[in-house]
Image 1 (cartoon, rainbow, N blue to C red):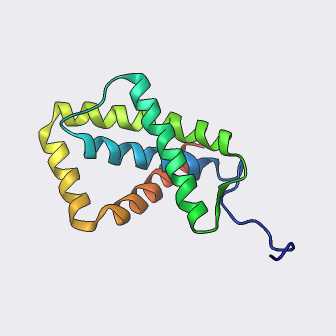
Image 2 (tube, one colour):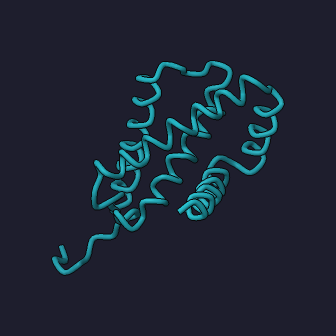
Image 3 (cartoon, helix red, strand yellow):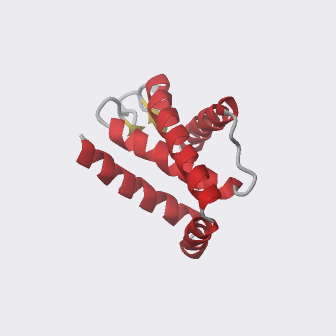
Length: 132
């Protein structure tokens, strides 16, 4: 094992704060589309799903010999807050308009989940950077 090898982080905090938040927004949006019409509305269950997503991301990168972040608790706080916000907004939008759901679900199905996820992260990152 090379002791001089530097650890590579996907999200280095605090510099990548906006990217971590954008990731939470994207995952929350996609979770709402995935769950429709059986939406989870209990606040505790939504938070559990968000925190579970953090662990899933950590495991995903660990399995590829990368580290998710240099500060996992801080990453989770940034991610979870945005996940919950976006999930709730998308639940409400889907419940108010079936057309909203169909339009977004169709778009995700056409381009694939991975591509949709990356496009959402890019879009949310740009939006958050505009707010900063």
